[in-house]
Image 1 (cartoon, rainbow, N blue to C red):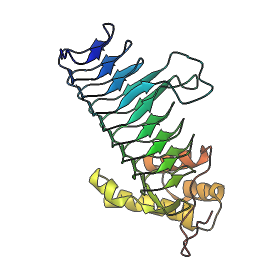
Image 2 (tube, one colour; image 1 turned 135 degrees about the vertical axis):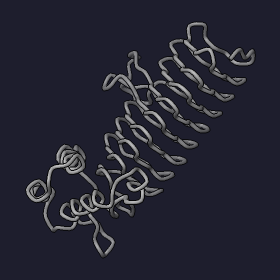
Image 3 (cartoon, rainbow, N blue to C red; image 1 turned 180 degrees about the vertical axis):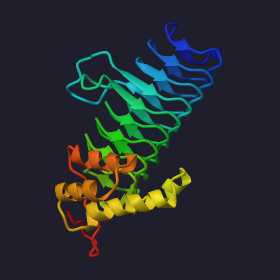
Image 4 (cartoon, rainbow, N blue to C red; image 1 turned 90 degrees about the vertical axis):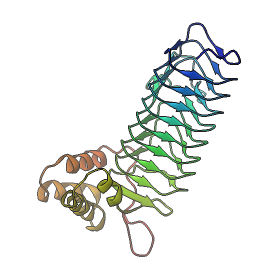
Length: 265
């Protein structure tokens, strides 16, 4: 890792087999795990915690201070999980006093020009395509995919195994296991292809489809639909995940599908 054309602060904790390419800057209070590759012209600032076997491509900036006028210099961090790939010009900002950290999970792919703002929590195996912009305090569940150039409003939650269409404006929470598209963002069915790829059986996918038929196509408001789901569908991790997600939604969930192309509550 000895690279004379890179600057590595003497207090940075860098594993022995990390590769740091030329013209990269690594500040103090940085930790980088075994097998990670840091490309040229990368800036890693104080508070970064980068796991094992990650790849960080040129132009990325990790752990810059939040773009939040309320930030008062509190000690906060950015955590990047093992095996995560961060492509060109991605920016991941430190947390604020709210959570004190920003987290990107393991085995994620953040494509070029993604921005992850302060206090975001991204799960494992997530894909954020080119140009995705996450505002502060966003939460993304495991295995979620966000299409390119989508913008996600602050405090929005995207559930596990959800897939959001490219170019979306995500103003409301997106429940687990669904596809979401159109404008305004609308339920567009179950992410059945993604679920099959991850080992979900046809029977389990059918159960999830029935759940969302009741929630989005049953002509009921969300509270009544959730009551009916709990009454008629047997308990399961997937059922409980959806029910708890919708009940605890702070911003409200996206609209249900309607044939005329407009959302229906």
